[in-house]
Length: 387
Image (cartoon, rainbow, N blue to C red; front, side, top):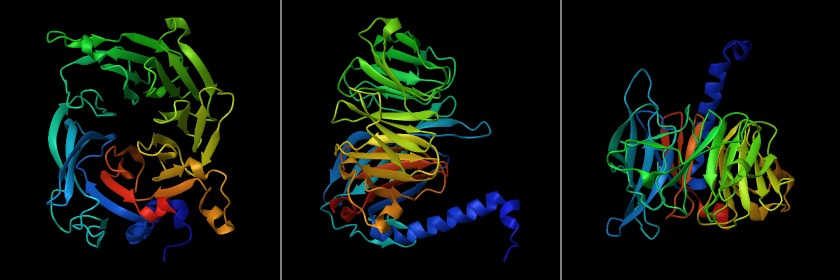
């Protein structure tokens, strides 16, 4: 047994031991908490993940083929790649998986020991690490790595394609600027495309940007100045900042518009909280979600359920929230686990979660990537949300 002083002398080792113990507990409980868990170790960590809207069903084999976009974050001068992965997911009506637990792999609902459930099928050379990769909703097969969009002076993580206006791309950067491009304005001979609009409204890093899913001229941005800003392209450039609010007590890292309710937007912050806002009245929050122990870096709404929101961050946890349960009565024992709206906690990662994505085809299926090089595809058990 180590001396009592070890915790002070070697905090990193103590932290690592604690993380490993938590992971063992999570792994042991996966058969009861999940209908599906697939874990895949990547060669390099990916800072980004997104499902492509392609689903090829193989009823005879009992699975569907789907695809993911990933990237690499290499070191020591190693080549970086934008990657496309192919995923085999069991069909709901299939008995192939039997919701069985694979002890060796630590997986639920897989295909025994068969290979190739997740495989990298395409790698495209990329200059520098891939901070964020997103497909164009109107042309998800489009890939033009030979066109460089200019306008930013520094790197960034915020990236959003317009669902309403084909080819319109929005990005935020560490240079405090927001750029809008129309990628349809390129030609074969034109290898560089300047920004259509450049907006400056934040006083520091612009951490994230997002187009409104229903209104072609509206988008939102958040930044290190703690602000949430709503922009309107219909207004004169100097007055495009339609609304703004100091959204959190620390840097705001992410935002997401609700795909079902045009007035609702969520933000996540370094203050460890997720906030809910009504665009019609932003003087105060609709609700504050509190359960994360560290910075929140991603928020994302379920594409299938209006009231389901997920958030992830540096605490290695992905929280799934159900807005319809806000204010529900709880027993003292349940209250110790979190507020009533906290539906589920995914604890399968041993490092900061970099990104996650809801599956647009299969309800409750999520892909998440973390700095531990791990890609996980998972689905919480039906009893979690059906209660």
